[in-house]
Amino acid sequence: MTTVLTARSVSVRFGGVQALSGLDLQVEEGQLVGLIGPNGAGKTTFVDAVTGFVRYSGGVELDGQDLVGMAPHVRARRGLSRTWQSTELFDDLSIRENLTVAARDTASIDESLELVELSWAADLMPSDLSQGQRKLVGVARAIAMNPRLLCLDEPAAGLDTSESTELGRRLRGLADGGRSMLLIDHDMGLVLSICDRIYVLEFGKLIAAGPPADVRRDPRVVEAYLGSAAAEVVDG
Image: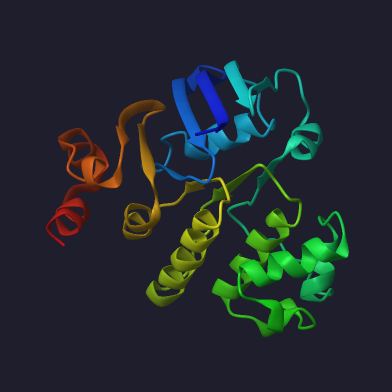
């Protein structure tokens, strides 16, 4: 299996705060990998480091090529695409026009909307869509760049249970279709139900990694931050 992303000993420090400490992480071709942890664990910091928005020590490779010194836009051209916690759409542009901002060509716009099952919304305005559908437009916009790796930062934030379930179904479908993704989210049910492999952070350090079935039962994970929610997931 081809390794798309390799992170070795990635560390980030903000002044006197060690936000991320020596994280090793891999995403294989066609895998949906989850990165979870409580607020302040370092999840978004890791994505910011990988995509070039914060300085880090350690190594990040995309398809075996070290990205050291590359600016965010260069990494994006190399195949690293991401979404943001806040889905910023241009409300005065149609859905198709929103994707045009990132797309390489018209074909990629149509294909991206089809992948997230929103072809019907191409000529609508963002205000015509639900919050869950707007999140999917953000995903489609990132896909339109035809990335080697898609990093999803809290895509389920603000969604209700049914919207989160629908998002999960479509993300799993993308992975099954060969799309390589790194998913950050607080929705434990979502992450545990759709990811192939999960990494767990606490205070910037990796405390567990493995298949969802192993992670959900890891006493370090339960003790660290899941509490009663973990018990419900384990028992469910």
